[in-house]
Structure formats: C-alpha cells, structure tokens
Amino acid sequence: MTGTADTVLTVEDRAGLEAAHVRLLTQARYRVAMYLPRMEPGILDSEAILTELRRLATSGRQAQVRVLTHDAEQAHREGHRLIGLAQRLPTAVSIRMPVDETHLAYASAFLADTTRGYLFRPIANRYEARGDLDAPGETSRLMAYFDEVWERAEPAWQIRPLGI
Image 1 (cartoon, rainbow, N blue to C red):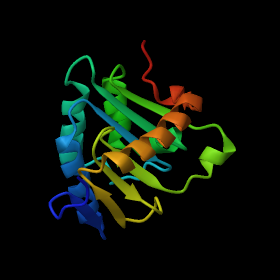
Image 2 (image 1 turned 30 degrees about the vertical axis):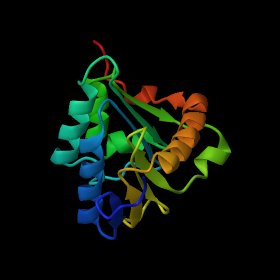
Image 3 (image 1 turned 90 degrees about the horizontal axis):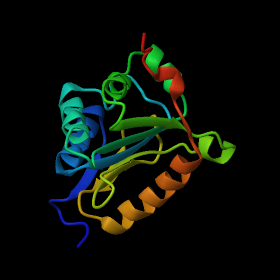
C-alpha cells in the first residue's frame, strides 16, 4: 500500500520540513539513514528531532543512525547538534563522507527509516520535499543508493571527540 492521504508527505517550507522529519523519525523503530550533502544549521537539529534520534540511538542492539555528508568538518565548525549526538553515542550514530566524485556531485538530500518511509528533497539546500510514511519500494531504492555510497565512504574521523 502506497500513497494514502495519511502517509503522503509534502513539504514547502522550513516548518513543514521539520514536522515531516519528526513524523518519519517517530515511526522508525531502530534504524534511520540520512543523506545530507550539507548539514545545514537548523535542519535536523531541533530539540524534537534530536529527541527522536536519541530514542532511536538508544533503542537497543539493533540501533543505528547513519549519516552521509559531504563536509562533516564544516557541520562541526557550525555547531550542528547532530555532530554532538554522534560524539556522545558513537556506537549507534555514525557519520561518513563520500570520497567518490560521482557521489560528491549528488545534490539531493533524503531521510529514510530504512524499511517503510522516506522524505526526499530533490535540491538539498531547499525546503521543498516529498515523501511517504508507507512506501517500501521507494524507500528500498533510496536505501540501495545510500548503502552503495556508505560502503565506499570514509568515517568522519575529524569530528570524533578527543579521548584525553
């Protein structure tokens, strides 16, 4: 079943994007994948979103929050709160950076709960997005791309906290 009025997500502004992210994260059980070419301040770092990500990251042995970004160092400099979460929960929250030029040219962003739902922004630096909370086919397609990039990406070691 795909595309019912209750599950379709259509976003046109920043507030709508945050609400859609919260809805998608709320339905996720253990795993979520995010492809964010740029981790913009104010996007995916609100208290409501971090609460859901923290819940996922501490949900048990299967917990996994994976983030792909093109510049984790810049996100760290700008104080993106998702970086802090990754530093506090490094076994459950992982951030990697693609190294392949083809992947670095990817200009869209998405969040997927890995099995059923997704939210896709065709142009990563814009708020407009579309998605569905119950679209396993499209979610599977996005996850196949995510997994391909993830396997070739390098861990974002430069954001790891110093263990002194």
